[in-house]
Amino acid sequence: MRTVTLKNVSKTFYDKSRKLTPVLAIKDFNLRIEDGEAVVLLGPSGCGKTTLLRLIAGLEQPDTGDIFYNDIPLDAVAVGDRGIGMVFQNYVLIPHWESRKTVGFFLRLRDREEEVPAHVKTVANITGVDIERLMGRFPRSLSGGEKQRVSIARAFARDLELLLFDEPFANLDAKFRGQARVELKRLIQEFNVTLVYVTHDQVEAMSIADRIVVLNAGRIVQSGTYTDLHDDPDSLFVAEFLGTPTMNSFWGRVQDGEWDGSYMGKAPLPSARPNGAEIIVGVRPEHIQLGDAQTGIPATIDRAIPYYAEKFLLLEVWLRKRRWRVQVALGEDHKPGDTVYCSLDWSRAFFFDAQSGARIR
Ligand SMILES: Nc1ncnc2c1ncn2[C@@H]1O[C@H](COP(=O)(O)OP(=O)(O)O)[C@@H](O)[C@H]1O
Ligand SMILES: [Mg+2]
Image 1 (cartoon, rainbow, N blue to C red):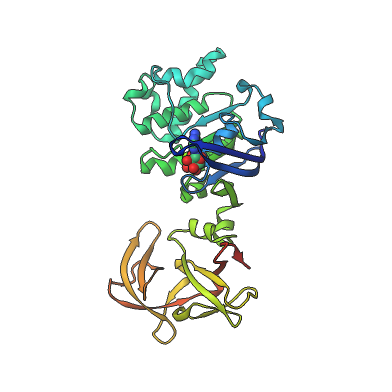
Image 2: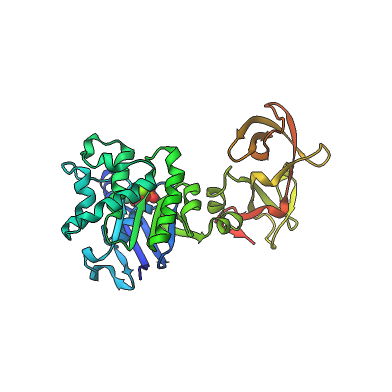
């Protein structure tokens, strides 16, 4: 069993640079991570991801609430028995230890140093280079990416039940990053390790997670698969945070039972709202079609940006003073300054309460 449970966990820091102003980093947090599950904590910078990971690792104490490791309070599990491999965001390596000593620390204590080379090989598969040549070097002579590889090797070179990774591939070359994700996913399945992985990158989250937990300001805002979150967001925050290119959002008011976005036109509401209520409509760039002058809303192309790998052309257009993103097929001929006529697919639009950001269904 390798489950992690957080019950009503809160954590406040006191900011020394601002007269000890309290910063509520984690707020009344509840989460259960199942045995063998790959959970990705996804959210913008400062939302509490690193704090949460440090709480799970036992490096920080919660102010209130409890953390359980295999349903046993974390405090009651001896550090050596926790089976946690960690990679921190700022890869803390001991300066006067060469990599071999860092990587072999856990196994050497247990007289099992002969197992180290196999773990190093595992990590070479993840990070795409032969890290054996890094083993004789000290941290000061390693690049950021190399330190990160040594940290990953250290995380794996032990009896492993739970991996806690904080943006572990951020300093790897872009061409290794995709490979690293695939390899990590394969390994955790092979060894049946539970993974808690922190990132602000939705593509990374998508490729690694069984379940994505989206955080904002120290709270869980929604969790699910990437498709759940992308296609059925509970809030404006999730709808705008997930999806590339970013969703368009338009402000309007309820008028005679319909959403009225002035020159944007009118749209039927998913459920009744009082007259005058402010509502934001979200439309993804792929749900806007270019049509003819009779039915479409005229807009002027500002930029046309090709996305070759994803095979689409992103048009950034001006519609009066609003900027929209429209996704069309790569190869369509569009130039800055051209007029296009936009038709919105209202059946694919999301409606949000402008004050709370909550989805209106
Ligand atoms: N040791 C600390 N002292 C004071 N404030 C902190 C400390 N660690 C984190 N914070 C604050 O807590 C919040 C969450 O930080 P963090 O968990 O690092 O977010 P993330 O990893 O998502 O970027 C931020 O507002 C950050 O400034
Ligand atoms: Mg962080």
